[in-house]
Length: 421
Image (cartoon, rainbow, N blue to C red; front, side, top):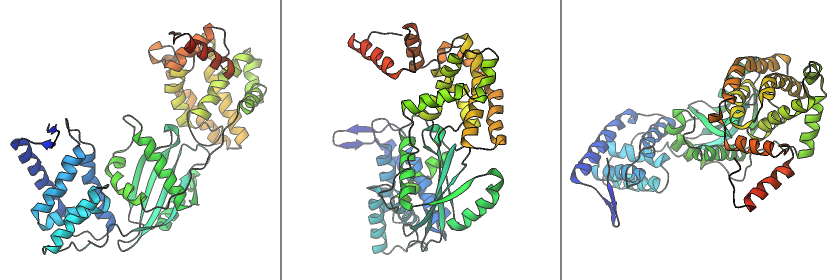
């Protein structure tokens, strides 16, 4: 469908208009699925899935949400059938403004004209937040699930958002269940004991801050690697997010300054975990340089606790980050997997995590070492930062010397942006 935009608004051909009305009639017929709903969650989930149909459409020269979402609301208001009122009331519970208000007003007009309200009409939109918990793995710390409980005439339910620390604190998956949050927490605690996960209660305002930041990250990512439910339930979650109190903040894990980083790297080079490499003939300076890459990755490109290095992080480092960003000669590439194993052991012992969990990450190095070697040698995989690092190395500049690196960049920019690569 390619409706054409005009200065005065949207102009549809007769064929396009009939096509849209046919789509709207079929959407109205689907309202039978929630005609006898008994919980607000059923209604909101159905409406959220419906809204996702509009939100992910692309029309040439027109706003798909306005054409299809707004168009459905207008069509339902004219149709005046019981199905129309069901659709309007459900959309009024989750649709973003101004469509939520438009749907509510259209529904009110139908009721005023004599249309019977759905049996569940008072349920959606009446839920209020109660408590919030986060579920986390304190060892691997690859992400957290931020769960918020709600209660009201529609009955208790819980909405959860999984936030991936390895993907920039992105909202990667979501769930909704018609279960009180305390009951869900108790169930998850029982099932998660063997996995070592923990649960902590947080303020509702902090939960709101986590959700807001995570979805902003998802929205700002091109083709994010997220589950379909994130799209399907997004309108519902946005509607629930509005109910949470503002003013919260995402906890800051804290940063290490250059001096602290240098001290950590120096400590690694003389540690028992790295000593066997040097005793076997490895250059201490090269060991420190490779550890710099590992520290840089773990502190600046993923989130979570300091010095963590989970099996998932090993996969990302070996299969993506290092091939794109770490400039390595043959000696460096040959030594890097061993330095990575030693660093994981060093960091794990400093954090006091169990040896079994340290070994899980070291075993991941064994799995992904072949990919690291193959991908790192292919210049087609190199990113701009790695190409810049090659230029710095050619100039004899230590890439760990931030002042010297910045001076080089300033000099290049002053010269008119000469292509140093």
